[in-house]
Image (tube, rainbow, N blue to C red):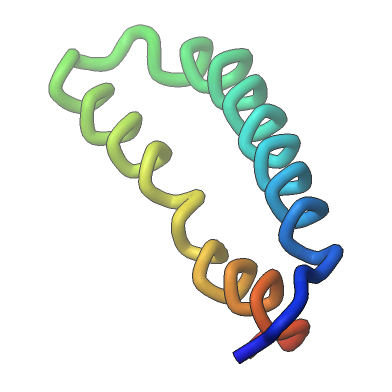
Length: 71
């Protein structure tokens, strides 16, 4: 347990926000062109998957913010 604040938390939060912004812009820019003609249910599945896939690296990132280690 740490007793004093660390620089990793604010930097990590800003990095996370920046990464999510870039990810969202890329998804909003390119995915509709690729799947725009698909059936609505298929598009829903794609957007659900893309909406959850950013969570995969989040655990290790949060561990780094808290401890300074990646695992």
